[in-house]
Amino acid sequence: MAEHSGPLPGVDYPGTFPEFQEWFSTERGCFDFLAGLRWPGGFVCPKCDATKFWRTGDGLWMCRVCQRRTSVTAGTLFDRTRTPLQTWFAAAWFITAQKNGVSALGLQRVLGLKSYETAWAWMHKFRRAMVIPGRDVLTGTVEVDETFVGGISRGNAGRSSSKLGVMVAAEMLGPRKLGRIRLEPTLKEPLALVTFATRTVEPGSRIKTDGARELRRLSGLGYQHDYYTQLGGTKPAHVDLPGVHIVASLLKRWLQGTLQYGASSDHLAYYLDEFTFRFNRRSAKNRGLLFYRLMSQAVNTEPHPLPSLVSDQPLWE
Ligand SMILES: [Zn+2]
Image (tube, rainbow, N blue to C red; front, side):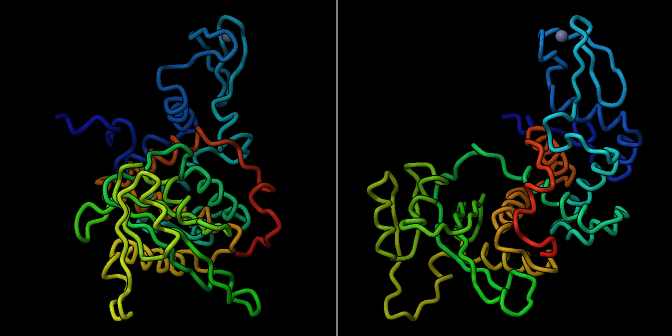
C-alpha cells in the first residue's frame, strides 16, 4: 500500500524555513501558492468556466474570454487585506512551526506589528480556519467525558473565578495510546455530553464513560457503551479514562502557558479548535504540513472582519 498520497514537503509546501523564505520571497510567490490551494485543477472563470487567463495586478486573474477579474483572496480569510501576504504567510508559519503555538503578544513581537489588536485579530482569524465543519467523526474506541478549565479570564478580581466545562472525546488506539480528539465547550442543556458524543463519534464505535446515568442512553443510540462506576470512590478517574485525563491536563497546561493572559469564555471554543488542530497533527513529521493545512483551510474559510471577532469582549483577553 502506498503511504504517501498526501502533500509532500518541498513539493506541496515548504519543508524548512530556508525553503519557506525562498518560496515566499515575493508577493507573487504568495499569490501563486494561494491560487494552487484555491484552484487545485487550475484557474476556472467563475462566470463563464473558461480556463485561459491573464494575470493583471496583484492577485488578480482576468478571464481571456469574458474579461472578468477574479481575486485569489476574495471570499477567503485574506479578503480585502491591506497587509502584504508575505506578512500573513510569516504569521501562519510562526503559528504552526512552534509545537505549542504563539500568543498574540509573541506574534506581534516577531512580526513587528504596530498594534497588539492586529496580532490578536490575526490569531483569531487563523483559529477560524483551524477546524473545518463536516470533518471526519471519531471511530473505534472513544473515551468521552467532561473536564473543567478555570482561571481563564485575565485574572482581575471578579471575573476569574468561574470554571468552564469542556467536553472531551478521545480516540484510544491502545491502552494509553491516543488517536484523534474533539473538544467543545459544554452547552448548558440537558444531555449535552450525549449529544456531543453522537455528533463526534461514529455509530457502532465503543464509547467509554463514567457511570453517569444519562450516559447510559448511548447504548440505545447505536454505540457499544462501557461505563465505570466509582465503587467506594477509591479509584481516581484517570485509571478508567486515561485518554481523557491526558488530554485534559495537556489542555490546561496549554491554556495557561501559551495564552499568557488567559482566554475569555466567549472565545473558548476557538482556543479548543486551535488545541485540537495541533493535537491531531502532533505526530506530523514535518511542521510545514501544519502550515499547508492551515493555509488550505484559510482559502476555504469565509472572511472574518474584526468586528465579528470581537463581540462584546474587551480586546485584552
Ligand atoms: Zn470568463
